[in-house]
Image (tube, rainbow, N blue to C red; front, side):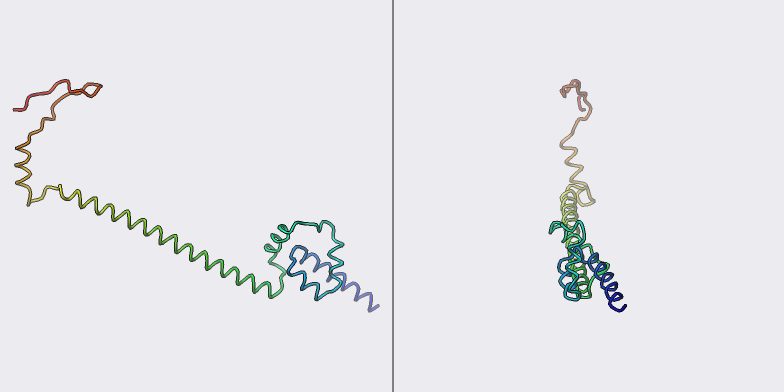
Length: 155
């Protein structure tokens, strides 16, 4: 009776470990060391012939039933990935801020150039004299081709 119970326990454990570690080859070595006969159960499961890429993908997605060493490794990788993403976000933010500052510098330079032509109290008399010395006549008509058709005489 004891050997039957032991066999049933082995069958349950082997089937559970075969399902858990079906696609995780690095963990399979640990399971095989704990349960030497588990390798035969892995061969008995139909549909086990998968590509190494699929095994790798399933191993990466297998998070629920993993050994503590794999869990620590996964946590370390997640922390490293999180750190990398934070660093990337900081770099992106710095690039955006740099582009923003360059744009604002261009605007400031453009405003400084335009400010040279502004009429202020200091240059008001000079600008009035300039306008009186160089009169402009804006009273004219243009045809569809852009030629001046009619112009009034400035008095």
